[in-house]
Amino acid sequence: MTRSRTLGAVLLPIASVVACSDGPALKVPPPDAPMSTVRYQCQQNKTLVADYYDGKSSVAPDGRPIPGGRVVVQLSDGRKFSLPQTLSASGIRYADSSGTFVFWSKGDTAFIEEGPSQTITYRDCVIKR
Image (cartoon, rainbow, N blue to C red; front, side, top):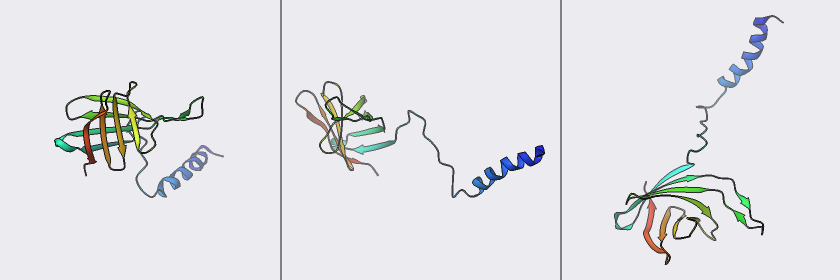
């Protein structure tokens, strides 16, 4: 086979795949990009932004699942927390290692508990649309 025929044999299938695509090429997010960013409006005119990251789940020695996700929460008072996902019976729970800062989300709502008594400091947060 001549060089031009070889080149044509390679390029023709590529060109036909490109010509048959049904839209823009899919963009793969960078490895450490959030899966989604959600803005919440809370009571007392407070706001928070949550960047959700996916992660690999694992299994504890006793068989319990260990979630692998995490969230970075930016509060309207200027504080910022990176929290691992933890086990939850309902909704999604993210907490620091001491359990004194907890971010909960379920559906379109979220709230934050802080301190040893788990005082709700950001309440009735709903997704801003």
